Figure 1 (cartoon, helix red, strand yellow):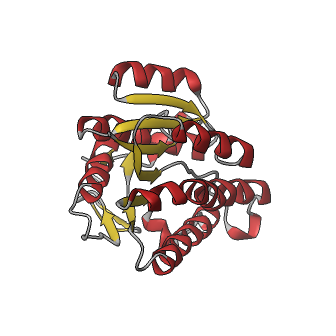
Figure 2 (cartoon, helix red, strand yellow):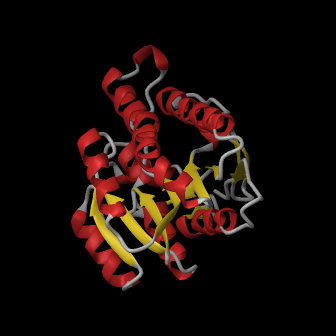
Length: 251
């Protein structure tokens, strides 16, 4: 039976790149996201090794339907990639938008919790399960204007670390991939409320920021190691970014 991999947030960016890459590695990929039009385009591109499933990770009912759909597929669920997430705003804490902070916590932390809870029984039953969660270097390094996102990603990494401890002795690996600066079509654009100039300024002068395929490569590598090998945390940045606050720009 074919191994099944679930990728959340698969309609664009790192999620879409990961779906393509895992399909090329022989997985049947369940591409899950809210935007069905983009999912259908992605699945058509990938071909027979992919299934599109509309899923909203902020909804218990939607995540339950995702789990039911996966259970009905011909194959064994062995890999979950918790990729869905995002950032909104760059307000200082003193002027932070509670609405934005709530959204970031809901998506990055509670969304990861919902999907992991729903799919963990099947992953454990496979005898060779793997959970990869896409975090961020914001998970361990605060920076000005990033309070809400930093707090959410700290919460997410705490969830992942706790889960790894709780699953010790069970056949499920728990892996965290923490990217630094990654240029995708939507991450910065969404963070700045759709302002293309502000989004572009994030990467101004950076010769080679990471791209979605770089992170997909890391995810695929970690997920395809021998089952006894657990990559607890992989931090990946472009060479131009020595730290969260230290970026070389050729201006």
